[in-house]
Length: 247
Image (cartoon, rainbow, N blue to C red; front, side):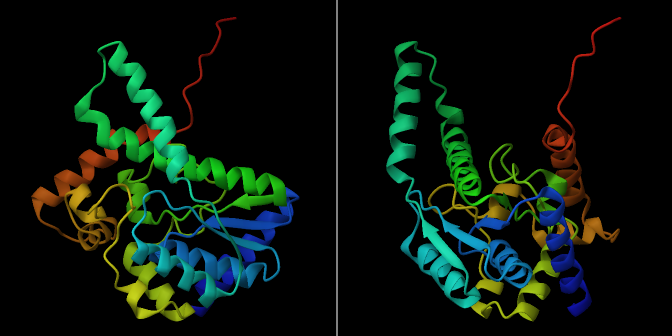
């Protein structure tokens, strides 16, 4: 694990140098992935790393966890509460749709959740422009493979240091880096709505996704879920389709 961490840190340093920027910024949610990213950033850029807390109707326990991550890592931090911004924007959107009698109640929860993710990423990029930093994404291999991220939201970062690592490998890295056990074993949630958890929304477990990615045998039902999610989310990972003019 020491070798893995050293390689990521060196990669972060080289990537920042190649981009001609000063450092790195990450959104800190109180979850394990952003905690690991923050630790890696601190090792790469002790004086040029920024952790940003971006609550939107966020539980006080998750805010406390995020604050503890910042304190534990020891990086500079900023909190930008986006609750009112989100509520104002989404209420205007739904109001206009209702006026046209075109509001789709079935998509309401997901649309609101995706807006939250995109508002958070927009805020990170505004801060990155101020500091001349790159935005660090926190997606791991399991999330990336099944498309469990919001396009132009948490999937819209500049660099992805954890994308080659399974969820369990991220947990192992977290333990090595000194992330508190409470966060290492915390039930994963993207904070998209009240009571939301990653595994309930995905329909299978991270352990089964990790096993699938390693070529291990898993129940056929879970395999089908994973493969269907991978196929349906291809547009999130593929380059943007571009029309080629005929000459």
